[in-house]
Length: 334
Picture 1: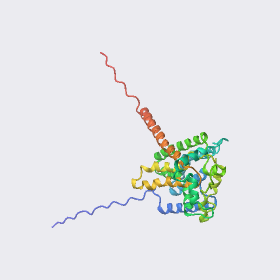
Picture 2: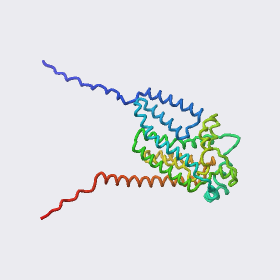
Picture 3: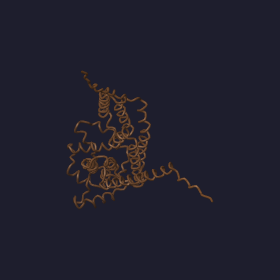
Picture 4: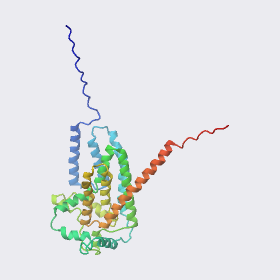
């Protein structure tokens, strides 16, 4: 009697790990070292609010995250980002000359805020009304701490979002940077054409009730006196009459709008809470009027509209150039 046995199934060998896949332990160690160095720089030098200083930290973060890759790949970050950082540095420097000795606009901004909110706040502008009820010169409250962190986020959120896009999708990164550059450029042009002073400046020269500039005081609650060193130095050196529009709130809304279509709608309220928190921070801290914020939001809408139309025009133009004109039909002669 002959018995037959079925052959045992052949189990294919497990795929070897891809050489491009980083060992988790190596990435964890590299990011831990970066985190320790960042905290040390944060306490010793200050939070990275200067574009060049922020560039160094962002670049080293990408190196730590992709530490398994060869160095030539890390040089691509410098190639792509150095022009962006130089433009930001030039923007910060040129903004300081925006007033050109002209008298800044103040009274119409105060009048606009009073027209919008005076009936509700007893004739006060929102900054004065908020500081009278929330600001205590002798004590730092929890909302002061939150406001300082929200204010600082202006200097890193947009850059950090752009770095993530650069790592994951270069086309979306390019789209992000085109819109961001346009937003910065239109804001800078407005600073030259319409120099405007913030509430703390107006109060300093007696054009508004007493207003304190308190955007960085919240860090004192944790003994982080050096955290705002660079930010405070930048505030002293920057142009004090570049308040219209508020690019702080414009950047916050810009980042949210750019990513809004990529997340589920249930997360939209959380994302939209960020520009609202930035608005409260800037108005409460004496950095901007509400009218500055509204104009900044309008600039965001203009940015997406204008750059989107320009991109569609360019795609039609380049597509037509690649495809070329339709071939002429041969003539028929009898």
